[in-house]
Image (cartoon, rainbow, N blue to C red):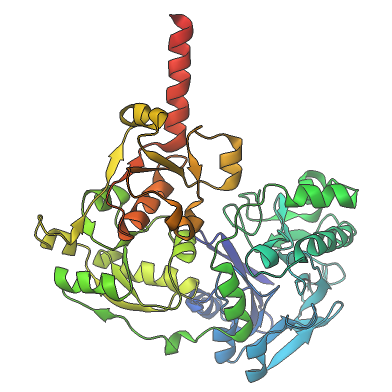
Length: 479
């Protein structure tokens, strides 16, 4: 048996290629939309991908299962969860509906299905046995747990209610998770655990950074497996869950109904550097500038928003970019393909035009179509914050806000900021603040794009404020 691990750091998403070298057949578990790496690996290993298996209908990325089905792979998909939890697009392809206790094989590798609801109603896990090895053919080797059990955590049960609006589902799924975990505890300690996500995923709150574990190790160390009382477990599971990105509901719909095949996605127009065209784009759709925040702050096309092309790009693109109107991209040519790949991974296929970000320098510096905002230090802003001369907006997550915040601040989490634009004053400067200054820089771009003329970003954020307060307190105590 061959096992290959694939990991997308921006999505914190894991997928796996499992191959039987004796028969030359392979399957991909929870494939990402771009199936090129799986095809290349299979070819290099002398394997043919004959199957694609899904643990559940994903909410945080576009699945590549349909892409593999187009290549002739059989789909192995959950038939659990009841009405509304079936893969509608699967009817077009050869697929095998899976129930609790179902068994299928890929070559000499055996997959046994466990229905493990809790994260979602239809969620299943796969217990794998290597039947091609005489020494291991009678014992399972590991479990693909998807978003059921992670290293150090378990899947959150509140996404359906918070992201998709399924009223009353959170407590029901939390109880289902407790039941599923009791079953998990019965599995052999030696089973390897191959989860669907790692640290940084919004599908849990405390995922470990280690890519794999064992059932026995999780029984000893995973907080969710230490609680024997259901009510206590439910309370602990729901406490402190981060806000789910807005795009999660869209991903559920896309993955259930069937993603657009990449071969059918339109190719964006590539435009020469022309600042007047860029200005027109800002009025036609969303003009996305992916430069570093400091560069955007000093000068940018009026009406554009800034989501820097860093590790958090996909998360904030999913939160803030529209699925129903064109996106125009300003980026360095060397970064364009990677950015398009990132947008594609969450179904943002509506990129209509691309232009080099040097267009900002091509515009006349005194043009009304060039805008900016200021980065200010804690020292520069302290007196104005204390006196209320600025309207301070904290854009961190709710859990961060509750852990401590500036007394005069108003809280609007970044992903929800635009929904509260009407509550912000236009007769005084607005100062944006997060933990260290990155998210508030994005927020600053959102407000300048929405016509706020006096916007500032607090450099260093709440962390700089807290450090400054500590220094001031120490100085006062010494004096």
